[in-house]
Image: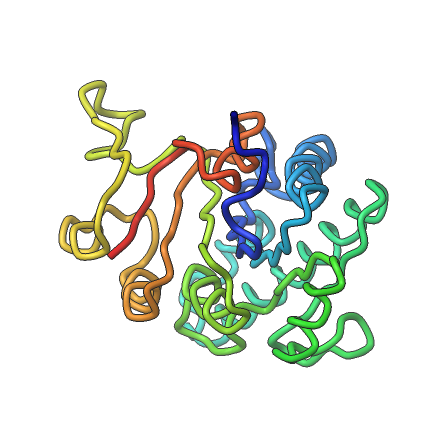
Length: 240
């Protein structure tokens, strides 16, 4: 008999800002964000507790030329503000879908979103609310991948799910190399050593040290998020 229970009870989903663009050059595509929220809702409806770390590339991409030559820290803060905008958009799309969510930001913007407080975030998750983590780590020079690893460890997630445009980690870019091979499983040391570029080395190292596995999958493959949560063979599993 098939097991209909989710393998993971609490997950951290890393969603890039670029994923929200759909086929657009930048910004937020409403149809795309609605589809992503539907995928998340299918998992929440199983009783899985979901935290989401959101990126900001879709918005920051629109001002990247203006940031050329800008102080790195200043540019990073701009990127963090973009993640707050995306967090609010995701929160509203979840509201429309009938979900209850909260946005917490590592940057203090209390008129707009509440500050990140670990204990409160865990309490929200236990109440069945989806928590959207914006503002990255709150510090420049760190990516939202690292924020995902950090938040995943802090909230006690059982796995970090990295949502991408491709269905896993390949030996080379599958869009450029037709002979590229997709890995079903790979170790953290192999991922770091081969410089596969799916996540930055800091995020990989943090997850490795915390023994927090990562699954890389395509958010645009219908049902993939649910299959990963159920423990099915989907995407690429990175573990110790």
